[in-house]
Amino acid sequence: MLEREASARLAAYFARIDYDGSTTVSEETLRSIHLLQSWNIPFENVDIHLDRGVSLLTDALFEKLVGRRRGGYCYELNGLLAYVLTSLGFHVSMLAARTRLGGAMVAPKTHMLLLVEVAGRSWITDAGFGAYGLNTCVALDPSVAVRCGNESYRIVKERAPIYELQRAGAAGWLTLYDFTLVAMDPADFEVMNYFHSTNPASRFRRRVVLSRVGEFTRTLLLDLDLRKGPIDEPSSDAIADVASYRRALLDEFGIHLGRDGAEQLFESIVSRGESQWEQSARLQMSQSRQR
Image 1 (cartoon, one colour):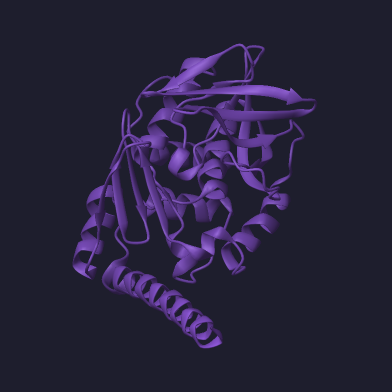
Image 2: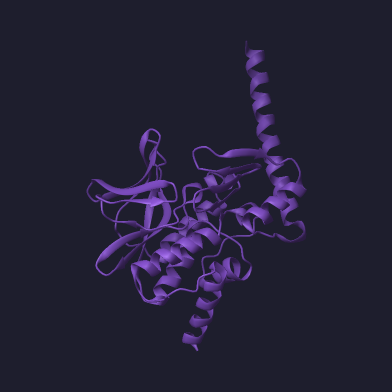
């Protein structure tokens, strides 16, 4: 029964990402599955802003990302990928990373990524890093840089036991996050998920983010700002009404939120923007009076 259930899940997943290749444990299989999931299942934190909650249970991941053809954020995307790879026979460990994005501020370790070992080699596999998301695996080897479309990534070991994932930019190599090889338990990510999906201090509560990785371009929707093109030089268009927002969700990310979902999400973004503007206006007025 369990084998039939797993087989049905894998068949549905492969149909979702349009994969009909080999399921043999190999580097080629790993890269192909990672690539097609990144292309076909977008990064998004929509349910957080609709207060629908985010479940990391396997049934919930398949129902949402595969059955309803939605996307998710790192715990969902990499959780789904971990299940698939493990089911195929890959050795997979869940790791936690500290997001840096080139900054010096110390943030807690709340990003989820995967370490996959194949034929004696170790690969960082991450289908859930949002705007900077990878569509390929990166070897855990400081001497090797990999191409991701028209971008380059590498892993360096600056100080033991900490590794850094870096991306090449105009100003040199930018550190996206750092991590160690200490394997985490799924229960650890339940705590992180609860924080990011419920706490007002979480960056995922402050902004609606959707991202899709293409071969050479990316599509990114930050609240009502739609950006398309190379990650460093995208075009930008402001979405002005709910009809355009609903169309962007469907056309760019394949997401249908039902009759009222897009309108509710659009209104929450507009309302949040107005409240921030009002707070700024009150601050300016107060400062003016003090002068």
